[in-house]
Length: 443
Image 1 (cartoon, helix red, strand yellow):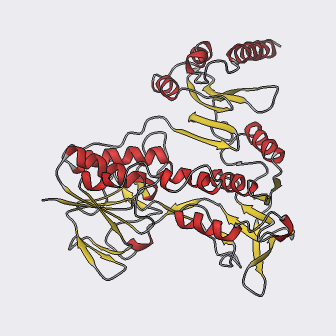
Image 2 (cartoon, helix red, strand yellow; image 1 turned 90 degrees about the vertical axis):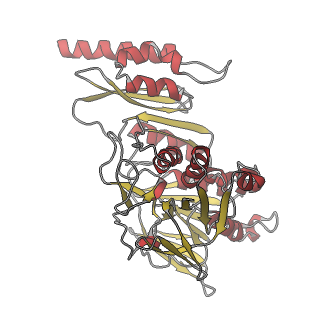
Image 3 (cartoon, helix red, strand yellow; image 1 turned 60 degrees about the horizontal axis):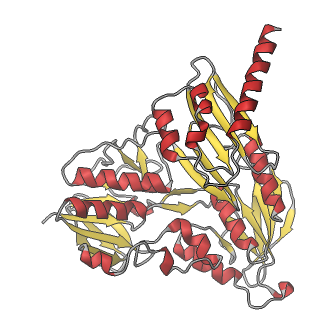
């Protein structure tokens, strides 16, 4: 019987296991050193804030694995020998495979800063990170002056940093956000959206320091964080430092193997590596040639799920290329929801135009990007309004015009009944903006 071994029990690995089982009777073993069972990584923050327990984040009952004949092995893989098709485990055991799926996800970035290994310095990615955060910030009593952590500094202005900030705010911890760019998430969001997020964070008591970078972290006599220094010389007393400067593929155990590596595990469109019967999916996979309109490495939950489904088809005999379609992502900035579809960059490219609308509350906005010459709709950013994924995705695939999108914007709205609707004022502003352009061109 063909033995499929999957290293990693995140969304990519478990999706692959489930779909291989649906389509075959192959023997399946899933190896993970992080947890006994698959859990929803995106729900870690809700455990910390008391909204859920760790058990609540496990989508499947414990009997699911036995019922579906998916063997779970709690271990770390230390070496892959693709010639003998064997894995070496941290406890000295070895395991043979016929087909191998590498789904080891990401690890938090660290760039060798002085003091980065002090107690109280951490990232937020794994279940172990959550446990460490609980240990570092546990509130022993109700007196703020006696808490272990009174001030924290978050380094890096991305989505994980926002999650960690919200988590700490719920514990009454003062947060300083250290951001390298001149605006929030400047490498991703245009200025107006970045400003909207920054205002919202400040409303929740977060202090934002733009154009500042981490220089070093100092500790006390017990090896605990006591102060952070920026490259401009600013000293910030603190008891916790959150390093949220992105993640990178977790592939250290593959060094020295015959599997070709770049920043991640190099794969083709079928998620196959250079080694026979070895595949890679999810955060750790790097495409030799990225799919059209996408990046070579995409560390997003839904892309990992899609890769898991695709690789299962190939492993079970139906060679299937990974075709993710238009880009999509979503997140929350405290209580403001964010969605992005298609190609919306922080700065416009040649022949691109955009239309921006912001609600008077300054908590809702929409930016639509299109080709000025062809009028083709390229993408949308939206804050505070829910959009229907299937509708926006369809319009992008059909290469609809910006005029069609605005005329049919109501079809894409996903807000529940009785929510305030804004299509009318958005369309009105669009019409006025085009009239002004025509007037200026005539002059």
